[in-house]
Image (cartoon, rainbow, N blue to C red):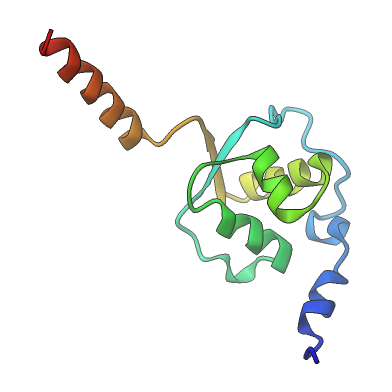
Length: 114
C-alpha cells in the first residue's frame, strides 16, 4: 500500500510547474539534441517533476534523453527545460570543458608520437 505522496505529486499539472507556458520562449533554440547540464544549485524549491529533471542532468543529457526518462512529450520537456534554464538551474552546451581538454590532450599526444 502506498502512502499517497507519489500520487499527490503526479496531480500537479505541468502547466502549473511551468508557470502557465505552453511553448518554450520565442528566442529559445532548444531542439532534441540540445545538451543540458545541472548547475550547482539547491533544487529543494523545485516541483517534483522539475527536480527529477534537474537530477537527471548531473551529467550532460540531451532534451530527447530527458523526455524519455521523464516519459513526457518533447514539447512539454522543452518547456520544462526552458523554465529551468531561465531560472539558472540548467546550462546549455555540447560537452564539459574538462572532457574537451582531455580529448584535445589525447589528440596532441598522438600527434607528438608520430
